[in-house]
Amino acid sequence: MAQDTDVPLTIALAEYEHLRELSRAVHDQSAARFTFFLAVASAATAVSAGLITTGSPDGRARPAVLAGVGVLVLLLGISVFARQVELNDRGRRYAVAATVLRTYLARRAPDLTAYVMMPTLDDHGPFAPEPFRRHWFRDLVSQAGMIALLNSVLLGLAAALAVLAAGPPWLAVTVAALVVPGAVAAHLRVIRRRIARSADRVGTVLADRCLASTTG
Image (cartoon, rainbow, N blue to C red):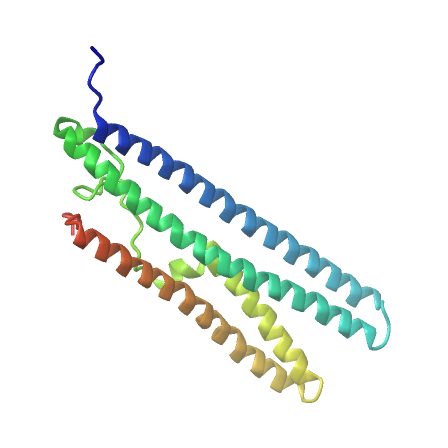
């Protein structure tokens, strides 16, 4: 007679392994996009510095070339930023799903609970999951936040150059000083709104399924 199969355990383990693969894919995609953007931004900076120091091309062509390079990097930065925010959000939700499955596995074997170091809904352990709602500085130094900083600097530089074409230098500096923090704040708002929306969605699902964390 065929040996009985623990169907719930088989499904849980298969789901957990699938979540591991998805989380790894998100991490790899996020790192690859961030590295690619940094490489493009560094190359654009080197090209711009070369054009400025060598004085080539001459006349009105040089500002146009510099502006074109800046616009291309900015457009790429906005695209990568949006994708990075999406990937980060997906990674957080995968982490919650993995925590829920670990909770199920730990509750099936209560004698092994003390040996489970990764977080569960019952015990966060030494590797407490990163909270959805966190200090804004943590978002600023994330990969999406670093891209936001570069985008903001480009916007500030573009605004300063636009003002400098028809106004005094002090006004250009003032405009840049206002545009950069404003752009950073706008980027951070996008990041934090996405995190808050995801946190609410996850909290609703956990509450509906009576899986709310017991650790507070």
